Length: 486
Image (cartoon, rainbow, N blue to C red; front, side):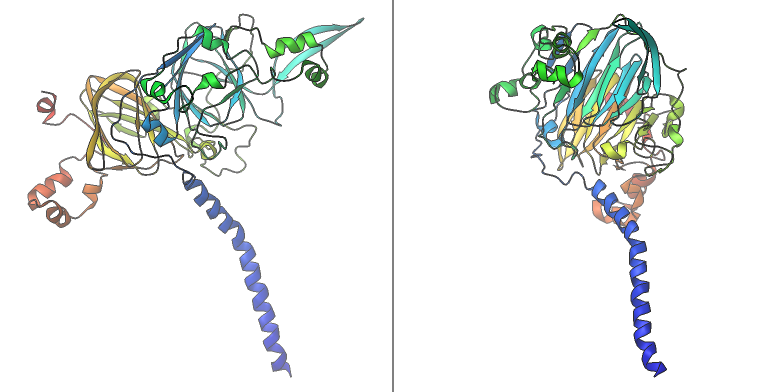
């Protein structure tokens, strides 16, 4: 009888044991499932990537404002459509305020010149800063008000700023020199569920006034498609700030203010553009220092160290000591990704700052899991890009130009006599690069016999292919440098 009871009891215990194990494994399975989904975020509806020819491009539209300007690259180009990106350059003059707004797509900014203050509004987070106080009179009573607001952050030249979509932000230049920012806009990101067009939603100002003041130069391709075709046509969307479309009485009731104040809020007659002069703006910040965490942060899933309201959104990658790759005869590379700046795991973007010394070379390489947008910050270089065994780009690129390189296309860079510096934005928070030459290359990793038979060369030549370059990624000028330049 006892034996007959033991069998059902053991089955019950086995069932409960496996049920408990399944419950314990569920969070782990969910973790890896979420991680896999993040890595596969680009498996969305893709545009056609039939790249016949790449071009180093300059902005083709410029909009002037009261205290600055912004320029936009032609997003109708094949490489932009393939990568699902847009690119903008902003110049903010001293005392210039880039008005509060939010966008439909995540962005990565890079400060090429100047420094300033930026504010980001994280919804539902506490007001932890106090910038001043004032008195106001209500009838016979006077009240003392202290201005409380969310955290202010200072940025400087060389900083990468990560900006999630739909968060309101603004920028102010409190210094004596202009600020220049370039920005990658990832309209193809899964976080953008509208369309493949960059859309800005301003909370202040009159965006359409930028068009009447600015110089507009339409690209040949845009003209060929007609006024209704293509992506990225901001003139179709910037028709006033978001308050301008509401009824004044309804807004006055919502804010509990008079309609004259609401009229100012709607800014229908404002002709200053989206970067305005703010002479009386006084902002108080604590002493400038590196944000906590720095380059030694604890990685993507840091749990307690970083919350949504205190998320670090800035990382400087200009300083030589910050370099991840360094060759005293070749140059240096600095990368910011989701390991050094965890918020990038949400934006699914990363960036790399590169410096090549005089006549130095960067190994032929390709990006395994991202598109790349390379903006030249100083100097010039000869760049070749090859896709499908065919050269699609072979030109000198200069300061201020932008080159978009699709995923898996192979790139080689050779600096000019003046050297070469650039910032590359990548459409993956952990972009992976594969090399063709040097100590870390695919050629170096293969057996000599494989190379001998694959290329029909001698073992000596195969050995030279593998071992002639002992440098990793950035190469000093080689023995053929003069012959190459001739």
